[in-house]
Structure formats: C-alpha cells, structure tokens
Amino acid sequence: MIKSSIKRVSVAALLTALASGTAFADAKIGAIFDLTGGLNIYGIQQNNALQLAVEEINAKGGVLGKPVEVVTYDAQSELSKYTQYTNTAILRDKIDVLFAGLTSSSREAIRPIVRKAKVPYFYSSLYEGGACDKQTFVTGSSASQQMSKLITWGLKKYGPKIYIMAPDYNFGTISAHWIHEFAKANGGEVVGEDFLALTVTDYAPILQKIQAAKPDFVVALPVGANQTGFLEQFAAAGLKDSIGIVSTNYGSGNQQVVVSPEAGKGIIANQGYFMQVENPENEEFVQKWHAKFGSEVPIVSGAVDVWNAVHLWAIAANKVGSVDNDKVIEGLEKGISFDAPNGKVSIDPKSHHLNQNIYIAEGNTSHGFNIIETYKSVPAVFENETCDLVANPGQAGHYVPGQ
Image (cartoon, rainbow, N blue to C red; front, side, top):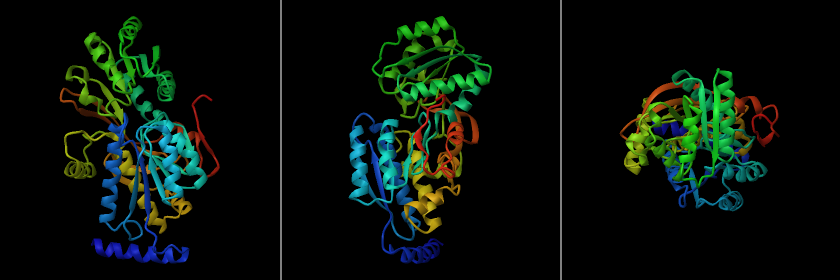
C-alpha cells in the first residue's frame, strides 16, 4: 500500500517539478531550537518532535516522493543566534521552510527575515497572541484561545473574584489583559494583580496581598525555575485550602515534575495538549516517542505543536505538488487539517493560527495530570478577528489587544 501511494505522489510531483525546473530538488527543513542553555528543557523536546515527524513522513514516502532533509541549529538560548541562524538557513542552506523558536522575542527576531525571503515559518509554542504575518504560521495556542475557556471555567468552579500573578513582560501583561476581558464578560472581577521579575524567589509579600484580597482563585503564570517556588510557597502557606489556582502554562515545561506532590495536587492547567489525551493518534505518538527517546520525561505541549507543524507543512506541499514558497502558503491557506495527538487541528486561512482542542487538567499526586474538561476545535479568538492575511497579504505585525 505504501509503495503504490509513493508512486502516485512521485509521478505528480515529477510533472510539477519538471515544469518548474526543480525536478531533483529535495525538500529541506531548517530547525532552530534551544538545544543548550536555560531553555533547552523546551528546545530539546521541540527538536525531538521535529526529527520524529520527519522520520515518519520519510517512511511514508517523504514530500513529493523524496526524503525530507533537515538542517539543525542550536540557538543556545541566545536571541542573537536566532537572527544569525535564520539568515544562514535561508541564504546558505536554501531551506524551503523554517521551524524555530520558543520565546516571543525569538519569533519577533525571525519574522522580518522570513517575510523578506518569503519563506514559510512555523512558530510552535503557546504564547501571548497577536502575531500576524503572511509567512508565519502559529501552531501553539494563543492566550485568548486558552483564557476564553480557563477563566469561564474558573468562575463557575471557584467564584467571581480573581487574583493575577504573572511575569513582568509581554506574556504576563497580555495574558492579564485577557483575564480582565473574560472576567468582565462573565461576571467576574479582578481583585488584585502582581507582575513580577523572573528573578523573584521570595513570595511572602505577594502571598500576604493575596490573603488580604481574598480571591476565589489565582491565575498563576510562573515562568522559569525560580517562579515554580511560588507554587510551593502558596501550598506551604495553606492557601490551597480556600483559594483555587489555575494556569495556562503550568506543565508546559514539565513544572509538575519538580514541584512536590502536595504543591502540585489540584493545580488546574489549561493547554492544547497533555500526554493523558485519549485518542488513537496520541497513543501511537506516545509509543513512538517512548521507543525513540525513552519514557523518563513527560512530553510537553510544545513538542506536539512542532509535530503538528511539520505534518501540516508536508500535507500542504504534497497537496499542491511543490515546495515553492508561495504555492505552499497558498495550500496552507486552503484550511489544511490533520488528525493530531491532541485531536483534529486545522489552519485558519486568515490568521494562520490553529483551530484546536483546548484541555483543562488537574494536577495529581503522581507528578502528572488528569484531564477534566475538553473543548473541541477552539479558534484563536483575537487573532481571527485581527488578521485577514487572505484579503490583506501585506498585513504584518504583532498586535496587542486594546491598542
């Protein structure tokens, strides 16, 4: 069955390639992730997912009947490396598509370069939202996408009073905007908020403010190893007995593994993927992952975001019969869909974001999660309203709500 399928793809691809003069060109992927440095807990899994996806695609015939080649770069958790390696990948290595970045700053460093070169670029990480660009496709979930479900759920579960604890940069501040928006729309109230430097380790003053404000639940968006201490100190202060705690990014870097069972139990996390998702695609994906990389470390959502991105690009290239940049982007804008480990995903043509499932999960005492709510095919609310890259292909920006 596989051989006959490969043959049909190869004939179609050959005719297209002959017409374009690229009959013998292999598809070439550029991958830039943080394989070393402080962000490598994410970057290694992102890169592993890309390699595993390419292996699967090549085993099924590749792209246009030929194996996909990968050129890998280590950004070393340094922003300047993203600019350097993006230029190298495009100018020297002649890549057809780029998969890269974790932080929003890395994405924003990359976007102008790929826009000028007209190279398709996939950003695969949950983020604050608002990226809008003809060449950029986002497969992670946006803040508005997650908060639209998390805040309404929290209000029903715990009550109307919310306290925000977030990092003091765009992820935290923009996420806070959405907390205010969805709280107001659903009868909730923000009774306090703190935006903290990533270096903060003593949360006693914040805990005192939370106790004084008497919220029904806290939206905690800790980032980095130091801020996981907030969860331990919150539990040690006995606040979990009377105040709920929810987060859109808890577990995205396997924080649930390092916090104590007492601190992790009952924390509500909200993302586009958890290993506990039950469907045939995820069962197969997890088995392949464990066979290749071992089962010691849980798979993070960003890994699945990359896996989905590679498959969506390959589907589009095979469908249009070309790796030509403009043709692939046009193919992706046809609303490509894919049965993914986190459920069916599809690209919104106007915003280049994914319609995808959003899950709410509860931390357990085994350093893991139990999924308690599933929302099917959730759109990226803000991005779909702000971007229309089909009608306005020249639109490009990082849009902030309220501006």
